[in-house]
Length: 146
Image (cartoon, rainbow, N blue to C red; front, side, top):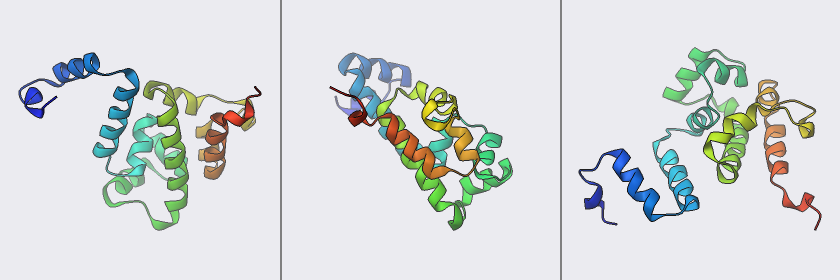
């Protein structure tokens, strides 16, 4: 398809054309790529895909929603880089393995593998690496016996 076909089309028309021309895996991949192009930062991607309010995002890092707004504009402080990287890696795995609309549900659902705590609860307690470990474990196919 040439970009001229989309030049005067509405987003709805473009979406319809793409949906008719491609399978769901291709479409999900396209949405992921567009997400990355539109997101200013890994933090922005986490907030978007986890569907966090400013207050919820602040709670993940033990700061106010105003601090999160500042981080989105100017970047987070260096001492938060490891935490954001762990959550960004977890988010990338979730985005590859789940439908986009399922991610907010998964991060809020308590699981037996996380001692009946949700991923958001783990992150709120500062256990960012445990969030990443839990997400990796969710999709570790070696756990399944043949």
